[in-house]
Length: 239
Ligand code: APR
Image 1 (spheres, rainbow, N blue to C red):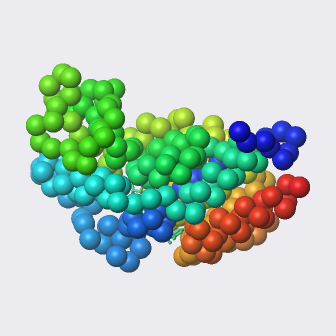
Image 2: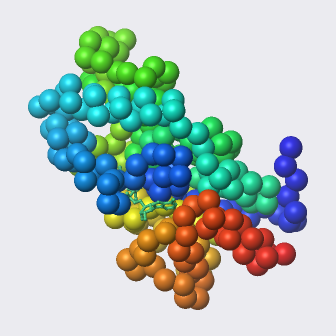
């Protein structure tokens, strides 16, 4: 059981991206050597690609899913779990891996889907846990249609967005880690925070539009070390 050091638990929202899983060995998308340097988005991550070359799309996500069985959460994920000792933490992640959950984060919302889930191609509400490395042609839903990865592809709506917005509106502290803030609507979520909400950003690379000033603190380090700095700074500012 966790006991808060503080009288009432403040709400801390985390927006995470591929960078938090980089130290676990999962490629980011837009770094040099990232996935979108190796693959053409339009060939593997759109609904058009799915209709054009289903086998290629399935194989792309099968590779990502198989990798999940070989990687472990890292200190970055674990520090976010530690924050739950002090704050009411809600993680909102763009990641489709399950490393936040495996590290022990209690509240995780996936904006862009989950590799370990699949869904029907004729009924979006038919979502299934998929505890297998591969999803293949011929794997069908209970209504007999092909199953697809439970992933938000480029050009598709982000159904979890509506659920995510209040977490940012109500946050007392916002923490962004490992995202280039290139992809909307996810990147726009931080703008739902109340004016004056402390914003901490952790990334080893510069992020356009983000620099330390006023209530914004940019820690230019990788997740494992940068989040340690943030944890200490937040606790110091709250005590
Ligand atoms: N720790 C923290 N951040 C890191 C680390 C690390 N060890 N290594 C790299 N990064 C940073 C990069 O500097 C970059 O700013 O992580 C960020 C990753 O950015 P992207 O590759 O653009 O990933 P992300 O922002 O999560 O992408 C958003 O785009 O392709 C879609 O749906 C996909 O969810 C994804 C979305």
